[in-house]
Length: 125
Image 1 (cartoon, helix red, strand yellow):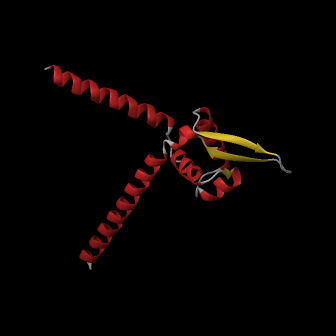
Image 2 (spheres, one colour; image 1 turned 30 degrees about the horizontal axis):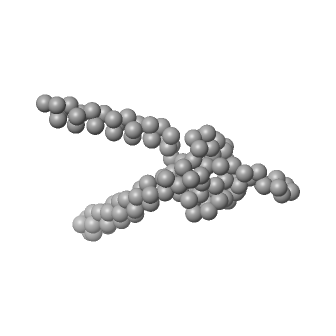
């Protein structure tokens, strides 16, 4: 009986931890931003170009959220005109394995879905 309680408690704690994580990484863009910055520091315009489909307003909002959560740092460069560069923090780097795992799963899933669609199309012919 106690062991069942521990399993439920462990499950509840895991769900709470997942909820906390999803709250910080919510939305469609944050993981893409983190993944880009794991490779190298990037300027705002570079991120805007690299992350297809994100608007400038959304990128600004997401960058602010990531900075508040200490996952990235914002550096104002001493250039003319002034440029801003973003880089992943050491704490943010702890998400690199997660971004790699998500990307790996995404590759497998895309391949599976595309091959399934091809099989369906072949069966119709």
